[in-house]
Length: 296
Image (cartoon, rainbow, N blue to C red; front, top):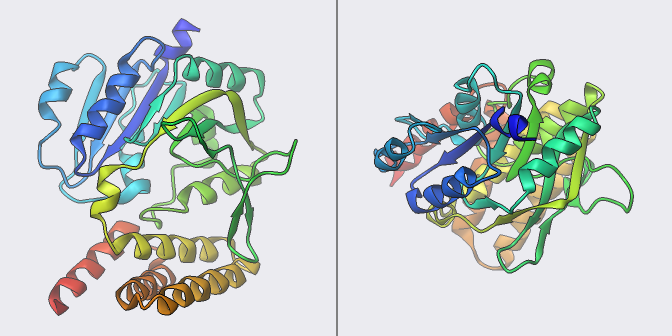
């Protein structure tokens, strides 16, 4: 599997978390890692240049002046892959591969060509289970554990392996999403092409919460609700029922807690997703940022 490992390009996004990103990339550069690592530095301050230069043989740094979000950031990195790439590894900057993980994912992809998405089991650093694939229920917008012995509807894109021919068939990530729910859309899109989402139980990734997540504040509520609204637009039908239910539930919880500011962020995200779902997610977020700044 040595040559197959060299044919893997990993894409890692950074947003104001150089320590976490450096840790993630160092784990990828260890034996058993991919042949190439592309780091996309969203809203770059240049903080990753020294690290990338020290590993110039395997690490390519792409600096973006704007925060493109997840989907557009990943697409930027994917588009810069080396021409001999046969597999793409999308991995969060707050995740690290356990020994042998990538080899297990590749072996599964080779054995099971019907798998469009091949994912490891995601665990917290203390070993607790975080994710082993999910079911998605459009009528309620619910994310549930997969039924025993069933194929998952989607895998979290904290870490997934995609054979390059899947990208050619299915396309890039949907840039109408800014952050959250793009992984659900992509896996469901793969299904329409007859491709499945497989979880490899012996492959493990450790996933901690990124430092950049905490800095985003109320925007997290907006991003998540925006993503769910864009997903409803993409799926149509019953997914709008799920969107309405989840929006009422989130608003209700925050109002009962007296979290008025948080409830406004939920509404901002909902409006943004319904209004801008056919365009660029990061452009819509930029417009909202400008509007919020003007009112503050």
